[in-house]
Figure 1 (cartoon, rainbow, N blue to C red):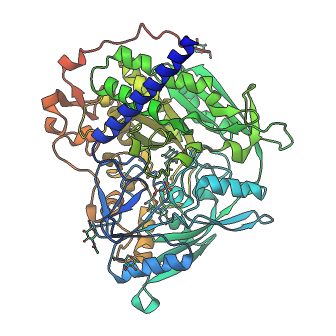
Figure 2 (cartoon, helix red, strand yellow; figure 1 turned 180 degrees about the vertical axis):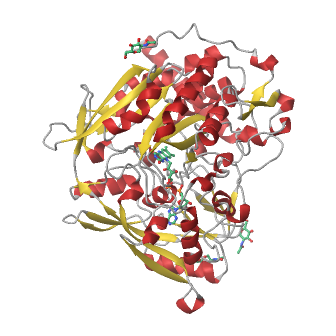
Figure 3 (cartoon, rainbow, N blue to C red; figure 1 turned 135 degrees about the vertical axis):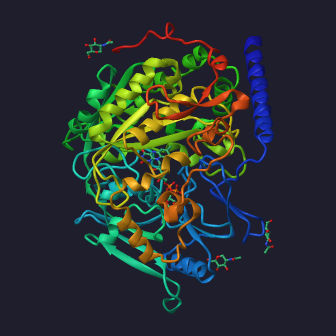
Length: 612
Ligand SMILES: Cc1cc2nc3c(=O)[nH]c(=O)nc-3n(C[C@H](O)[C@H](O)[C@H](O)COP(=O)(O)OP(=O)(O)OC[C@H]3O[C@@H](n4cnc5c(N)ncnc54)[C@H](O)[C@@H]3O)c2cc1C
Ligand SMILES: *[C@@H]1O[C@H](CO)[C@@H](O)[C@H](O)[C@H]1NC(C)=O
Ligand SMILES: *[C@@H]1O[C@H](CO)[C@@H](O)[C@H](O)[C@H]1NC(C)=O
Ligand SMILES: *[C@@H]1O[C@H](CO)[C@@H](O)[C@H](O)[C@H]1NC(C)=O
């Protein structure tokens, strides 16, 4: 009895302490980003700021706008565009959660207009017989997938995270994983679109353009970076709802370079997560099966579930300590095992019936397996500290990270993977951070007719890694991550994902799109005055020779540039501009030998690798 009381008291005390700690952390952190992507001054009409879900764009710039509107119908959307055009303002469309890392959604200048698709979030029409679904552009993928399924239809591919809007997914060329049929990019399934573009005063300053299947302008509008106009509605060609069968197989990585290209042809929804430090690759064996196959499996990816706020903030603080302060490789590598082990233990979020995991393969309907986003319900907080949230919620000082995503032609994927393996062999401990975020995810994207889609069948590599809240802060082994990125982009011809990455990754990328010229011609026709263009879009599209690279002291520490001088790193902190170790044309910020000697390797410590 006394024991129980003591336990309860202790728990209450710990609870209070944690709440106190949380309060201190959230207040000491200074300017907390506002709730929701767009926040305006209390007087409602001016002084708005736009941010993304992490509370920080890749370049840490603050995005200002004069005005935000929330149209609820296409008529209101046209009126919003017309008003902005008449007023000579720049415009950008913002979405419900704003998931992109770069400053894509920021209007040009500081007095632009933001048009939010928050309330353009409904299905307009479902034609089950013809398998067509028309939706408003702000519809969240989660809702789109659910409503299609209710009509017996399936979107065959989608990003794995469904807290995105169809408008944002199309603008950035987002995808799942497949080389079969038309491949995994959502824009491959677009057969119609209504887009609001600027128009002359005589036509009321804005007009709706209707693009049908076969219209070459649709090849521009399907992946548009948001620069052609405001997409009002999208029509998708769907398939009869089907089932798929999923299993994960972990193997040693001795042949991963050889298998990466072939795996995409073997399985319709195959992918590979490579953990270079652990020397294993987790293969997704995932194929369509007959709908009569028994099973009601589901996917609720653990990292996309609501995470209790207190452990979340605490785990971020622990990681900051390891990455920026006194972590040794041994400590970092020990910590890096937690996430992959947890994911494996939770069977990557799969259950055979929505409740329990009883074994592979997991068979279930497409809409319950293709994507998940159960944490989004906890994102729209009301100013109070929520008890649980998405891992990366910047408003709560959650896990801030970089996400680099680049596609490499299938024919060059092997050479790239072999290069990364060579770099790993030189310094295995440097890859613990990548392992801790579930490694290098390799997915397949097919060649596209979209002008800003993939020019050839490709492997998309996705890496998530630690980012500091402090500008220019040294991060453990940042030189190795930078070399991996430069190898992909500069040695193997990779192209960056439009919705991910840091500034320098986009330098010159547009030249790798053979149809970029076609795209620019459509842009000049739809929006001759560049109302929907911004500094950022001009830079990534190379308009007038603009570049997203920002050269200056410490620029390479933030991915704003590739260093060419020590001042681009942090010489005062012991970081100097040095060649890469495998790709010697790379230029990365490396710690001086004195710092590099800190914290030894952990090679002997992790020996639990190999088949399991
Ligand atoms: C946890 C997580 C997981 C992810 N997983 C994947 C994945 O599996 N595969 C993948 O490819 N990507 C993935 N991404 C990246 C993601 O696909 C992109 O960031 C996505 O495009 C953002 O969608 P959004 O709706 O948040 O759009 P935003 O980021 O808000 O906007 C992106 C761009 O689209 C424009 N835009 C949006 N709507 C319209 C419209 N109606 N008209 C005109 N322009 C418009 C905006 O102006 C902006 O320029 C992931 C991101 C996160 C955070
Ligand atoms: C509203 O507030 C902003 C910022 O506080 C200020 O710049 C602007 O002038 C105000 N506008 C009106 C109409 O009061
Ligand atoms: C904000 O934009 C809307 C539509 O674009 C316009 O009607 C309104 O006058 C604008 N408000 C201000 C203060 O500019
Ligand atoms: C990796 O696995 C293969 C079989 O899949 C085996 O032949 C090989 O010896 C293993 N390599 C290591 C280093 O364990």
